[in-house]
Length: 331
Image (tube, rainbow, N blue to C red):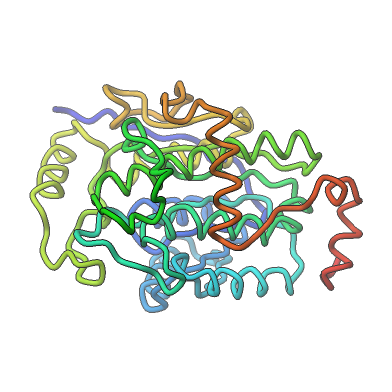
């Protein structure tokens, strides 16, 4: 099947600070390269420093002079999230764009993080939830656009309310779907709360469709020593033009995070059959993401599990400059 070229124009981001999680390979590396090429001052927090340095070298080979700052961040560790957020808060520079892209997918056996949470819930959702909460002063100062990456897996299943950390039973794909539904609900609720409390940020969600990336590749660190049949099939269908590539799968998040036409509380993804590939555009919310009550419930549960809280309503009414000064940041 002949592949029709698919792309979007990323607007000029010169002078804008963009933070991207999961930018060291796959879809995230494509997003990182496009942000850098558009002139963004890119902050790249990575779990594996070696992979991060390789990614920076690759980006600068394609985008000479790219402005990239590498940081260490393990989203499965709430302590690591706090350390990274503290480093950016100490710098005091407003954040204009935040793309929550990092994730893990379907470890064969349940893995507990250092905080005792199931790995997928922790990495895909709770770590990002805590990151946004702690970076909120900088996000508000920059009037940021926040895009959170969900998944086509959010089409089915539900949040595992009775056992969110999958301690009593564990199913790899059901746990992955649950984490991505939770994350999508959060991204939508974040925009609603920003409007209600005057935070001045916009939040939307995206998904990449289906493309060959390392999510399903061999990863001994999460208990997958060899490639499974799924990734081989995905590679074959991608080569045939039926599924996406990392380059096309990166476009929905880029559109959601940078387009002047993209707005908050919206869902962006590929437009072809079953939303697995094709040009990016706005999509109808999956049924699992439509409940405002579920979004409020996951917000409250996430504050408990992550041990963080967003500002009280009275605090959100204070001028942003006061909050920056109070936290010892540069204005």
